[in-house]
Image (cartoon, rainbow, N blue to C red):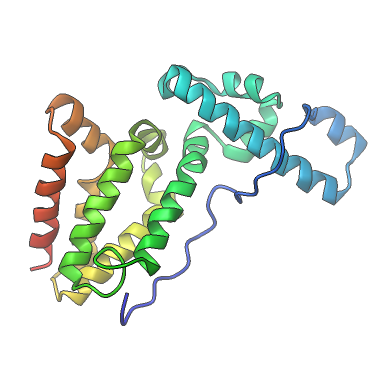
Amino acid sequence: MPGHHVPPLPAAAGDRRQLPIVDRVDDDADAAAGPAPGRERTDAARNRQRVLVAASELFAARGVTAVTMDDIAARAGVGKGTLYRRFGDRSGLATALIDEREQELQSRILTGPPPLGPGAPPARRLAAFVRAYLAFVDTSLDLVLLSQTSTPGARHRTGSHAFWVTHCRLQLEAANAPDPALRAESLLAALTADQVQHWRTTRRHSLGQLSAALTRLAETLTT
């Protein structure tokens, strides 16, 4: 974004190292044996990947709302303590599962071609962001909804939300729009998974209809 620096994202819910699945590691046995730091790091990374694979498979087979943390722990072959320490709750799991998709969109915003990437006027960049982000939410609706609504204010506490707010605010500032921070937050409120779900399932709006309407909203906010 010319003339602006976007701060690096806060650490996401764990790194994304892909390691092979191994046999179950028993939490109590590990604690009693006192594994070396290298072993602890390796086991933690392997368990994390096992959990993500299990959660992804269960969510796809049953739907997000029908899967419990106990189900995921059993499927992954890890102790419940491991699961809760690593992810906190199902919202943390959902955030980890959509992390890669969010990073891909962020990369396109920072270094991709215009109008989503640098080089286009701010109004066009903001409109392109709305189209891209709406498509991302619509594609991963159940997971994004879980990550945003499991606890009050959950969506505001993620590094990805900080990134989206910063990007929108910078475009609005570049367009000399008044109250850029407030307008950025207002635009993102219209793009929450809960709102998109309402429009898509209750109001029966097509993705194309929503994209066109929200793009017009974004362009209006830059004036």
